[in-house]
Image (cartoon, rainbow, N blue to C red):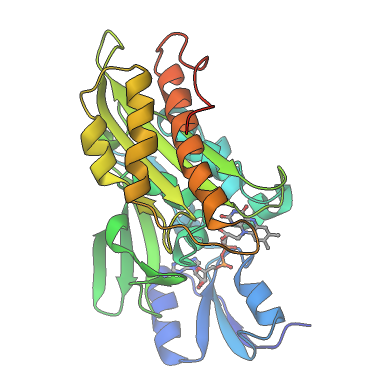
Amino acid sequence: MYDLKNIYYPESPEEAVRMLEADENSVLVCGGTDVLIRIREGRLAGVSLVSLNDMRELKRMERESDGTIHIGPAVTFSALSDDPLIREYLPPLGEAAGTVGGPQIRNMGTIGGNICNGATSADTASMLKALNARLVLLGSGGEREISIHDFYTGPGRTVRRREEVLTDIRVAREDYEDMYGAYIKYGKRDAMEIATLGCAVLARTDTDKTHIRDIRIAYGVAAPTPIRCFQTEEALRGRPIDAALFARLRRDVLSEVSPRSSWRASKTFRIQLVKELGERALRQALARAGVPDILKGGGGHA
Ligand SMILES: Cc1cc2nc3c(=O)[nH]c(=O)nc-3n(C[C@H](O)[C@H](O)[C@H](O)COP(=O)(O)OP(=O)(O)OC[C@H]3O[C@@H](n4cnc5c(N)ncnc54)[C@H](O)[C@@H]3O)c2cc1C
């Protein structure tokens, strides 16, 4: 049984904002894979829901003439992984979406819900951080566009106000063009498992594929919120692709993460995963960029 007061079905994001304002005991719901569980557990008992589930304009996928890709927040993980735009321009994001839950969750859960629940374990969040995604929030005062780097404020907390609706996720051309990436999630089993640790890496090489031109390293569950390792990225940019590059990554990322022990894994184990997944994801990204024989090394370092 779900302890619900009302369910509202707005026809537009603007109407959703008005409904949220009019009923202060209401919350947004999209796929419901987080919200309905919280209601059932009693943590959100007695609320009213404002549903975005059937809102077509929040499922729009588009690429503008300047190369900016728009991702509708109500797009499910399955639709995201299968979308032709994502397959052509943002395959690492489709890869991250493909690791979520099992087929039922991927058919219901949405990328907008994944970002807005504020979880550090959200599988698409670290890849969106690597992609420097920008988020458009619609509230009673109009729209504001913010960087995903300014969105998270703590575990389960974001800057989104209760009556604000995430209406668009934007990725600029310079953040994906010539970038190759990989998302690796570690869980105790392959399906229906929240990440013990997740790592998203994007890399751009020079034309002869011997040096790193640009790199982005992001983690989930390595800190209270999804994080980027900006200092490590700075240290690795321009370096030759050799064993020293991976050793440097393994050493430097440790000063930027702050994993904790939980019932899923100890801090010590997560630190090991930070190093290992970071190196593996970079090797995979470089292999996809066409760097030869790069998957052969790795593992066994301190
Ligand atoms: C069995 C199971 C397995 C799971 N496995 C994974 C996993 O492997 N990886 C993972 O990352 N997650 C996992 N989850 C969590 C969940 O499925 C995802 O976080 C999903 O993305 C939530 O999306 P949703 O549309 O269902 O969100 P909802 O439950 O509808 O909403 C989640 C939150 O986001 C807000 N919200 C939703 N849409 C918007 C919007 N457009 N604007 C503003 N706020 C919005 C809601 O108010 C709510 O606070 C799992 C959940 C279950 C039940």
